[in-house]
Amino acid sequence: MDAMPANAEGDAAAVADEDGFMPQADVVAEPLTDPFAAYNPAAGSSLREHMRQWASAGIPKSVGGSLLEFEHRARTDGSIQYARWRVRCKNPRHRNCGKSRTIGSTTTFGVAEIAGYLHAWLLAGNEPPYLDDGFLHRLAVVTSEDVQNSLTELGLR
Image 1 (cartoon, rainbow, N blue to C red):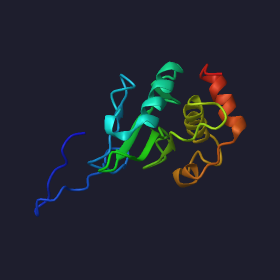
Image 2 (cartoon, rainbow, N blue to C red):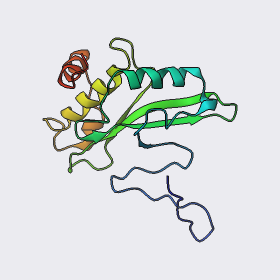
Image 3 (spheres, rainbow, N blue to C red):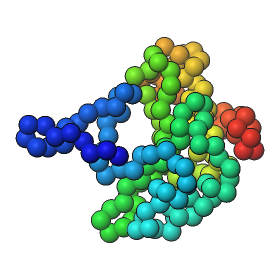
Image 4 (cartoon, rainbow, N blue to C red):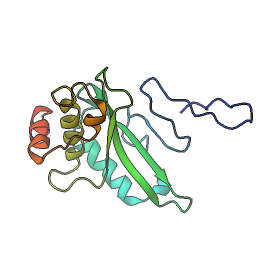
């Protein structure tokens, strides 16, 4: 992530990107060309195992027209504070609209469940009642059936 510009007091200025997301200096959020590129060795074996499963599942780099971005934050002792996958809504009517799913959200369909969930959520943003309202879209509920349909569409099931 590029350095953030400083304001008059020398503090990092909070500058939103074109989608309205606020950057966080200590968060990794970059497109994955290599699934291990975002791995932080200090963050523990659960993250390493998740990344191995993700790489072997054949999950595409983008779903529903949005790049799958990986974010994680490690505490100073090296333990994981959070690790998640994120997408940004591409509906031009939805400002600052995005969704994330933690790596622990894999209860039914394995690691592919995360991609299926985020894909289903993105598709919901192009249908009523979410089509014209980004706030409602962020609150959209994705069902297990929606995830299953998305996994089939993505060729992951």
